[in-house]
Figure 1 (cartoon, one colour):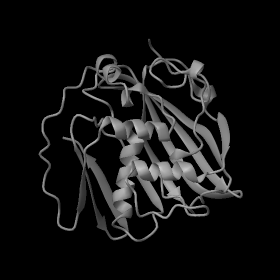
Figure 2 (figure 1 turned 90 degrees about the horizontal axis):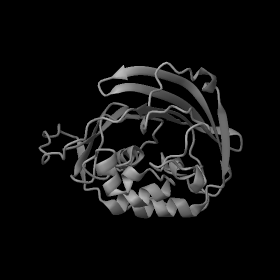
Figure 3 (figure 1 turned 180 degrees about the vertical axis):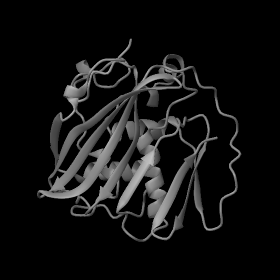
Length: 269
């Protein structure tokens, strides 16, 4: 299956919008999943940074899911045929918090589609710009990067972690992911991609050593670490996935501050 040479330029500029009441229940479910016992969550409370991912969910009918659990190609996203699809990273600007229990709107547009060759073969990158509004006021800007690729060779199970010592003043947390956490996070985001909950599929079909930790989950955990150490409001946040984390080994979250900038990192084994 090859998408090289195909022209997807007519997909650039494609737009979709959606509305959500930002009900309290998804935020409470997220707090339970993340063991967040300190954030005040009630009607009118500000939604913590990145928790907008638990709203505006893509309610794709069951009949329109591909075998891997992703929505079938050719809706909002272009019909790029490469079978592996991943959320590769995002850049966000937080202008003001979204408030729980208040109607909100999401506007998304495809900004760019790029094709290139990588070590594992051809790749396609789709850039999506999203704006989140309450009362016609822009609250959050988000630039998402979605990557499509051909299957790569199976990944070996990682060796036991030997992380380097942290710099003075840094913070860290060890996370031991398991199927319960990954399943609950997939439910929060209405994500049916089977690599996060179907172990035989993740191992035998896509070549991972175990269930794959969702990229957005890693980002949310990094933000949680940051929020526990920094009193100021977060104005900008960007992240990029460098490789998969799986539930066969713990990983380390770490971070540190330099002036007004905080750097955070998730380290696998």
